[in-house]
Length: 88
Image (cartoon, rainbow, N blue to C red):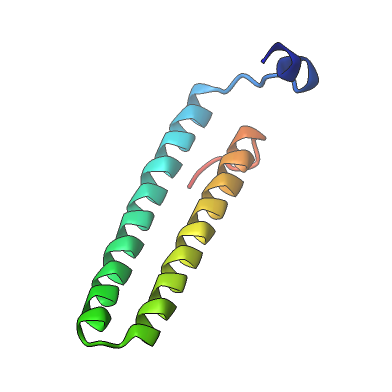
């Protein structure tokens, strides 16, 4: 841990940055839950109908969508940390 701190200086976040990070976490948590609910329900319906090809497609959509949201969140968080993003 000490070695890591020597290589990368720690950044102090302002209160505004901390609040933005918290808002981003909350927003993307909601987006993630929404996507999971929607696609999980579709997966359940298609599975019950025996459309297993569609189920696999929907599962891939879910995985891809969640990964995309996670990447977007991390990008925005980094922008906040660097002072490039001032509001959501």
